[in-house]
Image (cartoon, rainbow, N blue to C red; front, top):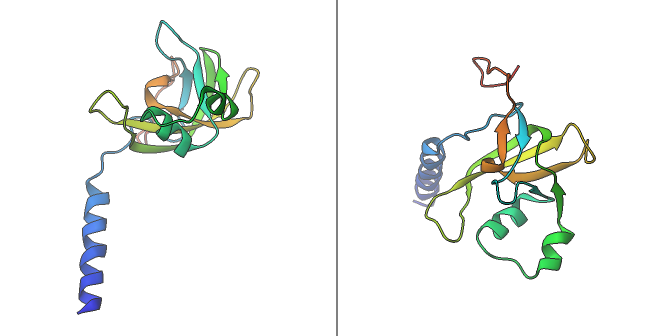
Length: 136
């Protein structure tokens, strides 16, 4: 009976994962970091969990935010190294956002890794997607 119950839980978990929508941005894509027109610089977070908490409106202080982020200037170039679909839940909306892991490829933070919201990562102009979804 216990084995059957565990098998049912495993099946339900697998079915839920299979239904998850893929990320809007693929691993290997070249992106340009830019936020909105009012404040175009982008927080590059040191962990996915901290970005998710910040997006949900959970943080202890402004000092804590600055201790765990870099402020990447608008236009910073990066490559996508990871993506978690729908992981961020902004506090004042019902929508979800993908959380994207990037490696900075140009500028003052070249070589640094971090996490941004998909809405702050824009595919580079002129790049084309291969059938696998990777930009070439």
